[in-house]
Amino acid sequence: MTGALGTVTRVDSRVCWVRCDDGALRKCSLRGRLFHSDSEARNPVAVGDRVELSAGEHEEEGRVEAVLPRRNKLSRPVAASAGRFEQVIVANVDCLAVVVAAAEPRLRPGLIDRYLIVAGRQRIEPVVVVNKIDLVDRAALAAALAVFHELGERLVYTSATRGDGLAELRQILAGKRTVFAGHSGVGKSALLSALVPGLDLETRRVSRKTDRGVHTTTRVTLFELEGGGALIDTPGVRALGLWRIEPEEVDAYFREITAAARQCRFRGCTHDHEPGCAVKAAVEAGAIDARRFASFRRIFVSLAEERRERGY
Image (tube, rainbow, N blue to C red; front, side):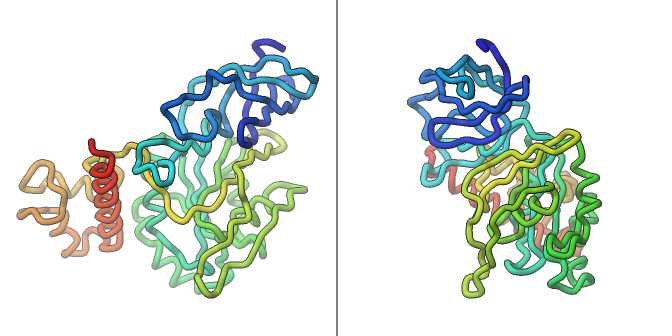
């Protein structure tokens, strides 16, 4: 089996499970040279990685000898590292399903903005999945998300409990490797259980006290689909840190701000305190959504603070 290739479907501490190209599923150790002393990442491989294997002691085992180059990745800074180290969540995906809840927990469009930045940077197709639509008024929900429709983002409205929107979502995801990501409690596990026959992932209710979900998914796992493609479940996040994106780059991922910024008086305008800022003027005139602009500023400021903490 030396030189065999496969795809990582699950990762634990210092081992991973690999679906080999011959169809076999093997539990694999990792060659020591894959670990780097200058990284705080717990594991040098991620779900979705293409890897080269050698044979293990038993037929169902192996060892990862090398990780092939990634075509893209979903990653974030390691917590408490001030943005110095990267945690790769998944690699080599076609689609990013940003799952949000219409209610319980409340809708948080700011997280959508952050995931759209990652999708744009990594050239991953995004789709915003708005779950739990059975809990809200559809007209009010459509108004809250109108800016994303106007920007041309793809939105799918679903209810994992009633089955709304699942046929449309299956059609969009057919034949693609899709990672499901979002806050805890938005219904990722319930959606995956509804989409994958025979899958029965644990789900929990959202805390009424905190309006936040409880983590039910504790590790990233890839589920293969009949007829091709795969769905990847990920643990819920409280917030999404952006890896190696400079503050000055953020407006490139807010295309309505990019367009207005061309008319700013000063090159490199941060759209904060500068006179002659065309972006702030567009916000005041209602041409740019005020919530989106506020989200842009929060992201800009957070990245500037991270850069100061890194010291470069």
